[in-house]
Image (cartoon, rainbow, N blue to C red; front, side, top):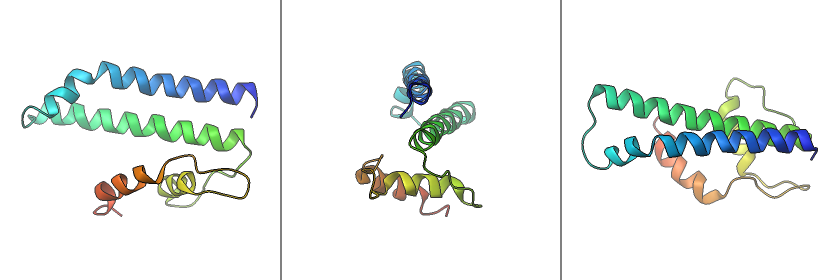
Length: 110
């Protein structure tokens, strides 16, 4: 993988880390009480931003190792599935334990 790809990946990871750290008070609040509408919207925005950061990181990884980026109607799900898959030339990018947890949340939406 070239230096520019690695820098892009590291940047995206740092953005996700910064988001997670800055939203820690909101995450703590989620465990303490039922959120009101504004807090729920903030939590939704956090989840959306986290997912976008992870997705951007995966795209940079696949581009950096010259693998095709999915281009179908379900490319978001296909990208994740690809990240969980091992190939002849690389190990899986994401641990399958995460896949099981994600499936609990997404089974009602797909």
